[in-house]
Image (tube, rainbow, N blue to C red):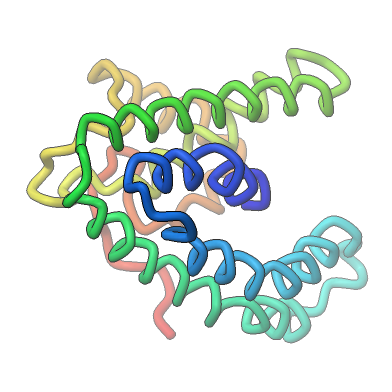
Length: 190
């Protein structure tokens, strides 16, 4: 999450401000990033350092609640911010987003390779964790199915479901979508 928001602030937001000609147009988004970051960092630290014997579900829940409200507000508000960009040159906005996405993917891959001890372990992690997470959170029915994300050949969801997702299959039931990118009822209600 840090990497995504840092990259937005460094790459995408300045491009949007340049296209719109309005300095500070994305300031609210940056401020919202700052609002949930401390709570998210506490959560992240707990997840990295907690051993199974010391796991405390109530503590984990409290940590999530510590950043959930400002993060949720940011995610909802950012939709309206992005929709409001329709009054600017859409081709330039799309190009800015494509540059941002390309740089994000490149730095994700490079940073994962540098932090991994072995290239194979990085590829395994990408296949077993990232692919099922991406597909399990991509709703292909969104806006009537006009967006093909991620755009892949028809057989890829099958490979992800039957091969890559097997190791951590218990976790994917919490995704809001199936690995075929179809919406489903959440596994657990409030």
